[in-house]
Amino acid sequence: MRGKSYILLLFLAVQSVFAQVEFKATVSKNNIGINERLRIDFTMNDDGDNFEAPSFEGFKIFGGPNQSVNYSWTNGRKSFSKSYSFFLMPTKKGTFVIKPASIEIAGKIYKTNPVKVTVGNAVAQPEPEEEEDPFAIIFGNQRRRQQQQQQQQQLPPSLKEGEGIHLVAEISNSNPYLNEPITAVYKLYVSPYVSVNDFRETASPKYNNFWSQAIDLKNLSVQMGKYQGEDYRYVVLRKTVLYPQKTGKLKIEPLTLDITMQAPTGRRDIFGRMEISNGTKTISAGAKSIIVKPLPEAGRPESFEGAVGAFDFKVKPSKTTLKSGEALQLTVSVAGKGNMKLFTLPKPVVPSALEMYDPEHKEGITTPLSGTQGTISDTYTIVPQYKGVYTIKPLEFAYFDLNAKAYKTITSEEIRINVLDGQMPTATDQTASADKQTVIKNDQFAFVKTKTDLSPIHTDDFLGSTLFYSLLFAPFLIIPVIVLAKKKKEALDGDVAGNKIRQSNKLAKKFLSDASKQLGNKEPFYDAMERAMHNFLKAKLHIETSEMSKENIQELLVSKKAQTETISDFMKLMDNCEFARYAPSTGVAMQQDYDKAVSVISDLSKQI
Image (cartoon, rainbow, N blue to C red):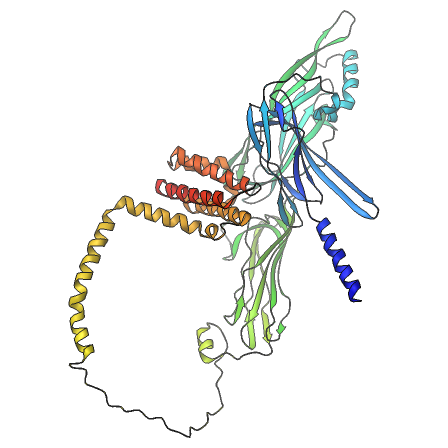
């Protein structure tokens, strides 16, 4: 039996190795010409959600994301593969690093490796096959039929040369409440009389003052619809869920595309066939204005922390009766639909006789077009210190119900924890506790002592003793020390520049204290570095995590009159932190990055 157990354990260990999650990025080429195109695939071996693509600095997206899924069983073993593909066009020569993409798999965030691509001079290349054109894949099956129809039909009066293509941004609600979800759907409408050969994105939508979540599109498919009352084909290019984080008038910057197209000219050749012209056209979805309403002040509960939607709130202990040395888990959870990632859960208050540790936070969230939904929870481990019965007071969770347009409060039940055995608390322990139990009196008598231990009560006179003279002359000895200390303080107070430097260095080391403890451990070190820089920005610029786009950070630092060189060093350091987590790094490099961070944070704290 023991041998079989070892074999089973070995089998499970091998299975766990093979079951390791992989998420990687691959490119069609690492060296391309300025006139070539690049394909990049982000591939995973397990299904995930909330895919986020990098910014593709130095490239323009002219196709994608295209998603493919492969699922098979071979010899009883499951094989799964899912990938997101982008088609890129370089905008300039040079060496560029495509930063990591991220995906959420089983509640954990995974990132791909950074990929280096070198763009050189233009190269001679053959005519691309029609299948390589990502947009031709969408419309290619209909293109030849369209051209044949165009040769036989008259151009409709409403369609002029260069028209027949429209990019539309459909906003679900232009007047939402703060933190109420809205959707932005981008559709490309193409007339039956027009063919699209190629397109590339020249400007991406910007969602300043919104928390945004892009929705994965399984595939791009042609659908039939109406545009201004006429028959059109259309493709949904993007779907994004937005949560406004600021009241008032907000602006969504437009999506812009460059289209290579074929359209009828309205003229016929000598054989009576419709003449077709090739051309390009830049189209934009146009900027959209959103008027965001504040949440009402009337009836707002004190426990309201910004939750908006429809929720269910629960506080559940793993057990309520414990023995000495046992622990319990207290789970505080919220389930429902709303701004799940934009509020914090209430924290339980427990008696001091119960030791409560920091919670384990879990999220099981999906984002369909209707908004974010799922469950979030904080699980606290609680260890009792003494025997007794303890009470955990009810918790309140308040939220704004969008359907009722009113605040609602859910209150949990009181929880009583019964610790059956263990050490009894002393009177001192109980007096130190604010709410705790009544003082337990000890009814037992001490034994009568059989021997005495007496000591003389006579003591020497204080007057004329060593202690007397020491206290008498001590003030005279302290006076020179006080004079020197005062002069030292006046010198330090007069050194304004030095004080600023010392205060700035102290502030920098305060934010970077966690990072300094992780020197030598690459990933924890750079995680702590990045977190420290974010906390510094929150403290100095008074911004939230949702507002920490690179453009917004740079604008705020410029507005605070920080020096251009210091801003550049700070942004470069943020990029280095992100890149270094996925590239080899030495202890010397980590020490250099830490010293650089201390210097940059110190300089910024003096400048803003």
